[in-house]
Image (cartoon, rainbow, N blue to C red; front, side):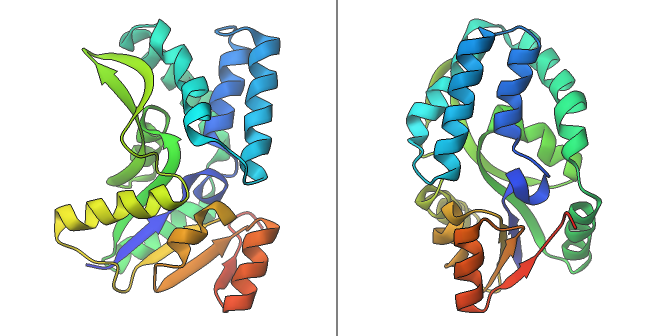
Length: 218
């Protein structure tokens, strides 16, 4: 099996689904607009700066999920997909996935964004395997905490290694596509690292190491 893995936000998508979810909650009046937007923007800047406390951030993101039942949340999510995710879809990303699929590669999205947000996006893209940060569920309700290791930075390597062990597979010949320097731990583990519309730190590292650099936007 050859594994082709993809970051989601700002890689396959032309935008960040996690941040867009926060914007959606503000726009729909589901949270205190001024306070939530300020915090959402602050966390996003910390992420861009490589300074994000992932557990602190996840508690912020997951808190609104704890106050509503699953039927309500799934209705919101369907609206979010139509309003926010569909405009971020990229034809070149769909083609890239198709190219790997035609080569018989096993496709996987590995993302720090939580599964509640990302599962329908993976389904929309036709990617069967998803590693995402797992929100804790107790009796069908979100608790606001993270279950296990968030798939962020070194956590992506840990979570992927767990998946590989469970499936009796390896990273031999594997690909990983990402836009972010936060994904350098995993990019350094695969045989075929690809920087996609990379941030300046990742672009510099990719050029220094002779990695492929590409764009799905231009």
